Image 1 (cartoon, one colour):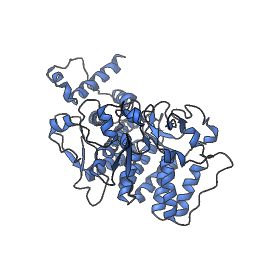
Image 2 (image 1 turned 120 degrees about the vertical axis):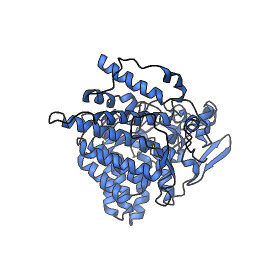
Image 3 (image 1 turned 90 degrees about the vertical axis):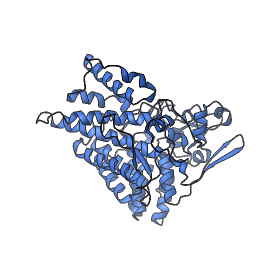
Image 4 (image 1 turned 90 degrees about the horizontal axis):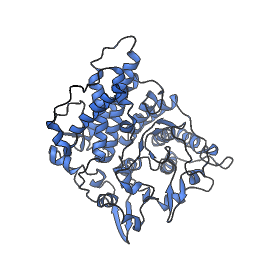
Length: 453
């Protein structure tokens, strides 16, 4: 207990330095009893802090900005000013910690603490597997956080502009005295890919628990990264490698779809567990959020997702289909990997392979004996169907904002619309607002460039 306490105290001391509102702590001398984690068990304990590293936090700016839901007028008026501004894509001059930026860099910092300190521990025949797993896990967590940040705070990846577009601050060390400088979007994605490719050979094929990373989930995260970059050959490659390790899908016919909590935590499809527990943006909380009515209507009566994912509210319908009871699941699951590979195959012209993946998924989503395999005459027709099913399967997983951004780069012309008190608000394709604003206090403290809004 004393061992764990010292590790947690060390982490909290470092995190204090990351909070500009806590400057008064900088003058305090550290207790000599505080110990830097210096053993593999110390470092593994840091990585096993699910509260910080598996998303028991509120990273939700992107999901709150997306279009899978709406907030009724009376509930909208109950939201805070920042929540209302975010919902309508207005400039949100937020300064209070915690926020999405702070949560993301907490994860980055813990990963960096582990990476800095594991290098000080000699590899031996006895500790090699443990040492590799710790380093690989830290690289995975850092890349997962950076990809979250890129989805929220960066423009969509574009080969023509990524070298100039503002990316993230690529902190690769736990040295908090280094200045904060925004890298380019290109460098941000290159770092994510480099970290993940370095992690893969260090990780086990499957984890001892899905709270930990694995080769399986690292391949899937590489596929997600390449999908967001619109690099479909690479997305297909890594989705395939992930599915070669784990390809199990839940048969929704074996699920009590009428239950308020139909899906088990850590179920068979989960590859890496991550959640939104208490969203920074309350508009996506089930109390406020109602599922987009056209989206709800798109599910056929024999599609079990219509019962498994939604319950009737007044007005509208509320989402209940998370792969984590009472929280929004935002990790990696096998259904997403099938859909990534299907989309990539379709975009690469392999219609039959694309439809095979889609039908493998959908037959386990429809009532037994009712599913008719999807057919298409062209790869482009198959692609359109796959994109519809992707949205229907992966809603409220912190993926839709990324999808809108990349699809609009492909010419999808998705226009987002909110209606409040009869007034319509629109967000046009490729608008600057797709790179959401950084916290004002971070900008003021560091002198970094704010996203143009």
